[in-house]
Image 1 (cartoon, rainbow, N blue to C red):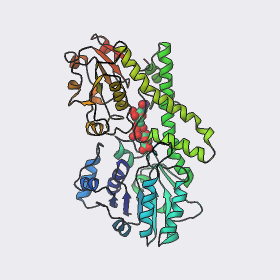
Image 2 (image 1 turned 180 degrees about the vertical axis):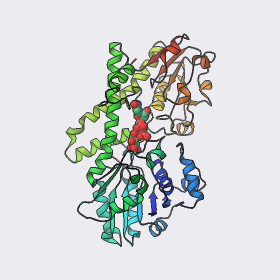
Image 3 (image 1 turned 90 degrees about the vertical axis):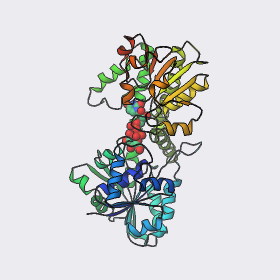
Image 4 (image 1 turned 120 degrees about the horizontal axis):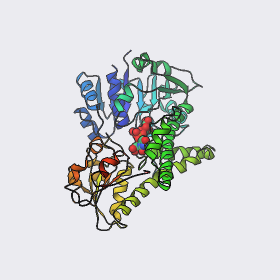
Length: 441
Ligand code: UGA
C-alpha cells in the first residue's frame, strides 16, 4: 500500500532514502533546514556524487511522488510515517556522537503531531537514544501515546546507496516492546516490495536495533585494521599482504571482502562510529568490552603515518623541496566525500614536511579545496604528475587502476610510485623501470 512519508535530512542518507521510497511507489516529502540543498534537489540535482541517484530523483520529481520542503508543518500535515535521516557527527573534542540534529527533529516535529504517526529513526545513534526520543516525542505530541517511535537502521554504503536502499542485505526494525503498536505493520507496508523479494526482516527491541548498526560498522572497521596489522607484520617479515589476504580469504569463514590492506578506513561513518561506540559503552559500564576498538583506531591512524614515512624514504629521506603527485582525495572511489579521508590527510602531512603536493581526484576536487585550500589541485592525473618526484595512488578509482607506466613516463621527473591501496600490479611498473612500493608488500 502506498504511504505518505516524510524524510528528515537530505544528506547521503536522507536524500537517498526519500528518492528510493518514492521509487517504491510512496508519496514522499523530503525535509531539510538547508534551503540551498532543497533548491538543488527540487531542480533534480544531487548535492553530492552518488552514482544512479540523480536518475531516481529526476524520475520521481517528474511523476510527482517526490517533493521537498523546509516546512515541518507541511510535513506533519502531509505524512503519518516519518523517517529521521539526519547526521550524527563526532562531537568536537570528544569521542561521543553529537545528537543535536536528531534531537532537533523530534523537538520540532513532535509538537506538530496531532494525529497518530510512526517515527522511524534511521540515523546511527548510541544505544538508548531511541528509547529516550520515544518518551520525548510522546510527551511533546498533542497526539501523545498515538505517536510511536521505532528504529530502522540504515546500512547503505556511499557509492552504492541506491542499490543498498532498494536491495538491502537485510532490514532491521527495533520496536518498543513495552508499547505494542503499529510500527511493524507500517514498516511492512513501506517495505512491501522488498519483503516480497524475500529480503530478511529482523524485528527486535529498540536497543538491539541500535546496536546492530554500530556492531556491524565496528566489525567492518576491525576487519580492515586486522589486515592492516598483518600488513605491518608482512613489511617486517618481507612478505606480501595482498597474497596473504587472497589466501586466507578463500576460507568462507573469513571471506576476502573488506580485507584490502592500505592506508586504512575513513569517511563519515566508520571512524566516528567506533569512537561513539566506545564512548557509549563507557557510559553504560561496558567499556572493557570495547577497549580493542581503541587499537583498531590506532592501527588505522598508523597507516597514514606509515604512508608518509614510505614516501619520505623513497625520495631519499627528506620531503623538503620535492614534488609529490597525489592521485585520489575521496575517502573511497565512486564518492566525492572527503570527510576524514586518509588520502587528503596524507597529502596534508606531506605538504607540511616541505613537499609541493599536487592533487587530482575525479570527483572530490571541490570538497577537497574547501577543507584543504592550501594544496595544489590539478585538472587531470597527468597534470598532477607533471615533474613529480613520486606519484601516490591514495584512492583506488578505476581511472587510476587502469594507469600504465607509458601514461606517465614522459611527465614525471622520477619514476617512483607508491600504491596506498594495493590496487596496481607491481610487475607492470617494475618492468618499465619504475620503483614500486605498496603497503605491506
Ligand atoms: C560504511 C559501511 O560499509 C556501511 O555498511 C554503513 O551503512 C555506512 O558506513 C554508514 O554507517 O553509513 P561507507 O562509509 O560508505 O560505508 O564506506 P565503506 O565502503 O565501508 O568504506 C569505508 C572505508 O574503509 C573507506 O575509506 C575504504 O577505503 C576503507 N576500506 C574498505 C579499506 O581500507 N579496506 C577494505 O577492504 C574496505
